[in-house]
Amino acid sequence: MAASSSAPSTCPVPSSPAPSASTSKKRPTVIITIGMAGSGKTTFVQRLNSHLHALAGPSGSQSSSSSKPPYIINLDPAVTNAPFEPNIDIRDTVDYSEVMKQYNLGPNGGILTALNLFTTKFDQVLDLIDKRADSLDFIILDTPGQIEIFTWSASGSIITTLLARSYPTLVAYILDTPRSTRPATFMSNMLYACSILYKTQLPMVVVFNKVDVVGEEGAGRMLGWIRDFEKFQEALEEEREGEGEASGYMGSLMHSMSLVLDEFYKELKTVSVSSFTGAGFTEFLEAVAAASVEYETEYVPEMERVTKEREASLAAKKQESLSRFMSDLSVDPNRTGFESWDASAGAGEEMEEEEDDDGVYIDRSDERGPAPHVDMARARRPGGGIGSGMGGEDDGRWPTPG
Image (tube, rainbow, N blue to C red; front, top):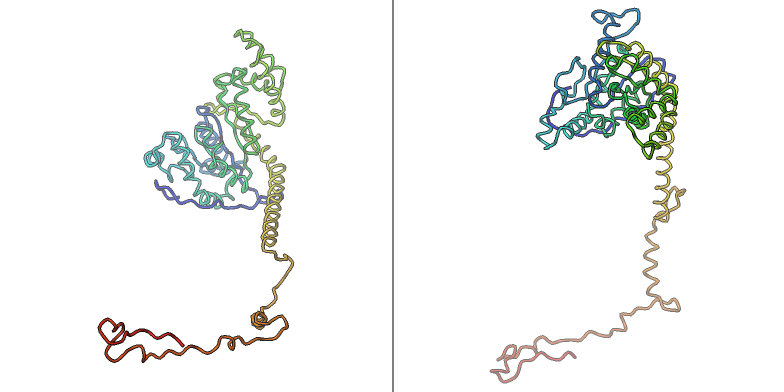
């Protein structure tokens, strides 16, 4: 993709056909990494890239695991130094600093605008991926640090939808484990993960990153909160008693939220990793494989059903609009043609206007009488002109007709 700092022209989003669950051809799995700022998304992508390259063997030669080097797409225009070499980089297409200057934006507005401009050319990105799809196992997307810029923006939805309609796609929600040791902050992170799952409607893997900081005990404690509702309630009560908080509104609210999240946890895939040491990435790839199966068995049939319903709804609206239009014109929708116009019929109608009550034609030219005769020679007298009475013998006046 050619580098350009100017705003590209807007292009329509290409419509991709819904993937079929019975497709025999193996397609690469798309991993979209999403997480709060500082959760370690970029470092996680770097470690995952190194792990997959190690499985592929030296110089890209495949080992017994049959893994291939991943295809990495960087969607963060504000990153200064990426610890990996992306195959497609948004910084090669849109200059983040120049966007801020031209549009007079702040840092977050500049990132959002840069992502929007890049999305207008995402059809070219899909073409590049399609050319390499046969030789890939994984496509990894590193999203901007500000989670809301990708998750809740139109450009993020477009990118996610286009990829999900072409390849098995899942969301890897990166969670900052050291910042989630308290039950309240842990619940806030999980609520955000639940909202992303609802927004994307894609399989999700929650990744507890930086477990090397809290240790195995801390990571196991948080995983226990997910698997056992009572353990989380006990931790919540211990924190409330230790800080002397009253069991009022906040206590009831957190208890209700934990009940909601308990249903969310039942189908949630979780894994603990350390992007620093590389621990847990084998388990992460196993969770990715399970999410890919979920995509084929649940997401694809649901997407096909929604697509058929949308097409049927559009067809019904078109038919309704056509019927209303024909009704406004007082035209029978089942009528195939119109009668030809008879020119003689119009002439006959004009003739009928001149008929009397008895149906007799009347020539009204006889009723007008002869036209009056005016002798123009009498208008001018020999010795005078028009109005010669002022100086001549007779007044030269126009004669009265008749």
